[in-house]
Length: 552
Image (cartoon, rainbow, N blue to C red; front, side):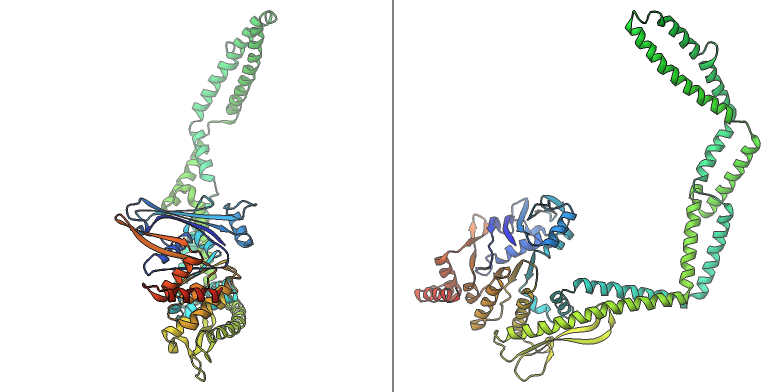
């Protein structure tokens, strides 16, 4: 659940620190006071796009942070631990975002730099926001389908269906291309085969060019190498070489080494020098024994190098890249041969279709079960929202296979008793659509695992006894989730277990917004304002107190 929210220099908020509670909290205030600012801040912390206009006028940057208790959200905790963002014994999650005056932002999860993608993935598991215009999008088939899949917990299966459909269509395109481009593919296949044969005849192995260059350099410089090795060996092992001089030095010091300790230390160093010289001498002897002046072999190496360089020029690669060029051509040839195998492509397309239909049928089963449940419970809620006798049904209409499955999801409604069910976008008025949308949201929210639910003026277009029913439904929802609702309706506000009031005032040349927690008397005054407008009478206050007492 959301524990705390802090804002600094955000829009018209200079500084704001809020502590959240369990249950149902209402947020009220005059139009334009800044109620939406809090929700905008939460949206930014959950990955929404930032804008420079969100930085308070005159400030260099806006700072937003939130603290969450994620105890009980095991999947989220495991995900965060895998990313190194949560210690094994931690259950608190902090999210922070800084937006500068140019619109650039930085995000942090538990004080570690994070991406917007990470914020969105995490945010979807923390808070579910129902916006005030949600009911408008409910007329769209894509929204109806998404809502049903969310309700049935089929998001991963729906994604698998989409991936399987794309794979099937790709296999179909490959098959069609092979059937239509047989002659052209044959020409290309012959060209690649000729190139592969030519490069294969070169017989070049991986690393041959480097080895060839090294052996060529040795053969080309054999005389110089031998001369240098023999001269150096003479300086080491000759009559007046370093080994002989070292022996003389040793004899000079040995007889006095027991008297002078530094002589003894020097003799030990002579041992090390002698060993090093022997190693050098062995290396030089090995060079002398292995190197020979061989003009014939040198000519063979040079001819091989010319051959490889000719092939490299022809295929426009470096000589050492010729083996990889052959591998690339052979791979392209195999791919072309596979593409030309129409029967194999038909088999692949058939298997891809079968895999798609397996996933799609499973999705259809889950949708059917969820459609019946969502229809029944939404219809029951509608009866309490001034829609007595109305019916609601989620219809699954068979359609051609698509990335979304084997059926079209269509919400149908009969707004009046006895009326036939018809598509939602054909019959529902604005007010009815708002009430139907609210019913669906309340039903769906009862089954979500997201701990915090936010409703932003979803009660627009309703009033009276219906508003009271909405308030009670949201309060009931607060028994299972942390619920925050922005509302203009006194009946909904009176149902809140906690009440926050948003107000704004002028401070010099600036307009500042603030939020305060209302006590018992403060709630009476606020609900009275919502009931009576600017002029609040004792009768209005009495009515507000009665409403609060009745909803408690």
